Every structure is written in structure tokens, then in C-alpha cells.
Image: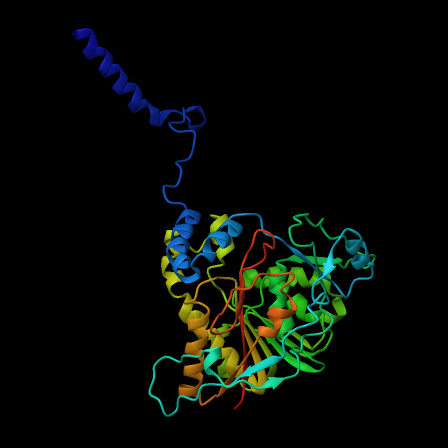
Length: 400
């Protein structure tokens, strides 16, 4: 018994002396980091399963499988480069999807805005079937934008782009569905264009490929993301163009844009921050479903609404606004647009017309899968054979 007591006393003294041992000589108590009990990707999947299974119905199973698989990329051709990259990629089986369109595209239908001045309603309900339709010429697209993709079912990866003799890279790898909002914006010669939430720069670069912009305002509220945007532009666009007075890069709060630059731009792209569904399912880093970002995620719809309203105010009468996200969420898509139409009319006296993008879905149905029968806007949904998206887009025309 005495021997046991002495042993315990000795062990206690050894533990007490541990604090006097140099750190480099101490034995680690635990070598592996504790695994996170509820990773952000798992929380995102639980959220999507409960929400999108109701929103998309049977379609959710195939969309879910695609979201959990490797995404497919497109190669946005750089018109400022000097190498014949297009021929090289086409020799490998790629096709330029903006030029590979369905010849029997449906005529464009313009959706008339719902006038709610006589009806006291806190929510605007805009439905394609309820709106008076008028046959118009085919939907016009922004010119000179080229994006090459491999055929449906072909999961070949693109090699990294090489710089030409002047240091400009030949193409930019991005989700090919992200090019659709830029095409639908219909930028024409001399237009003043605003990209309100520009970083990381893919859509900004796509709009620059039109070579039609009179003045280009490029903005993002994040300083770090704007730094990344500048690096992207410097890798693809000649320096004289970047230093031109016709291009302005800023880091302003986009929600306040309407306070200091109203009625200015012919075209406004509002590609808002969202839950970025694919990233949320695949990456734990910088994941908006992390528990410490719950408040930020809940505030997203209000932020999106404020940004869209700022974009509407920035557009001139007759100008067009393209709202886009990379989420399937109806709350961040349809609901935001509906509320923006209502608020713009009631609080700012701005009448908006919804431009029907169904002709776009007919043009590019060989390349992308689109969600059926959306009441407002159009959405690319991921599919294993064409694993692009998700991308939601809705186009508005400012009347007053």
C-alpha cells in the first residue's frame, strides 16, 4: 500500500514538472485534429434536400447527383489574344456554343409589367401565362462572345491556357452557363455598362469581349475580391485598355449605387452574392453554411434585393437590368425579383417590364438543361451529361 502511494505521488510530481519542460521536448497529447462534427458541406446538403426536393420535385434527384459530381467548364475565348486558340480547341472536339444554336428558336415574347397601382398588395405576382404576350423579333444577344465546350456527356478537361507573345492568356475557364447572362444582356455599340458585383471577374471579362462598350463601370464591395478581379483582367486584357478612362474599377457598396449615380447606364448586370450551391456542397472553406456565417446567410435575400434595386436606379429609362445568381433557391431568385418590381414601383415610381428569356432556352437547349415552367426568369440546372450551373437569370427593362 505504501509503495502504491509513493508511486502516485511521484507521478503527480512528474505532471507538475511538465510545465518546466521545454516545449520542443514535450510529448503531444493528441496528434490528429478533431474531426468537425457537422461540416458545412453536410449542413448545406441537409438544407438543400429539405428545400429543393419540394421546390424541384422529382427533378431534384438528378440535379443533386450532378451537384455532387465534378462540374463541367467552358473556355471563354479571349478576343484580345493573338494565338488561334479556337481552331486548336475545335480540333479537340470543342464547339462554340453561342454560335451553335437551334435554328428553330421561338420568337421573343415580351412580358408586360403588372400594374399594381389599383391593387393594394405587398407582393407582386408575375406569371408568364397571366401576362399579355406580343410577338417580337428573335432575342438579340451581346456580340463577339465565344465560349467553347466539349459535347454533352464528354467530361474531358481543358488544359491551362497559355500566354501569347504579348502575355495575354488565350482563354478563361469558367462555368459556361455563367456566359448566358452576359449574352442575354444584349450589349450593343456605345452602351454604358455597369457590372455591380463584378468579382472574381469571369462575367466582366465576357462583357469586355464584345468590344462594344462605350463606358464600363466595374464594381465589387470586397477589396480582396477586387484585387483578384484586377489580376484576372491584367492576364487577359492589354494594359492600355485597362488604363483607359472608359474603364473604371471601384470598391463601393453596391447597395448605395443609386444614391450617387442614377439614370446613367444602358445595361446593368447584377450578379449578386448568393449561397453558391455547388461550392457549398463541395468545399468547407469559405462556406456560407458554416455555423459562424448563419446570420450572413439569412441576410442574403435582403442584400440581393438592395443590390437589384440599386441596379434598377442606376439604369436609365429604356435601359435593361440582368439579375443573376448561382443558386437554385426560389427565395433568392424569384422572390427577390418580385419584391424588387413591387418596391421599385411603390417607393421609387419606376415601372419595369419583364423580358421573356424563353427564346434563349430554345437557342441553347442542345448545350444546357433548363428548369421547366419557371413563372419568372430562366434557370440552368445541372445534369450529369451537361454539368453546368446552376445559373438563374431574369431580365428587366426600365420603362420610366
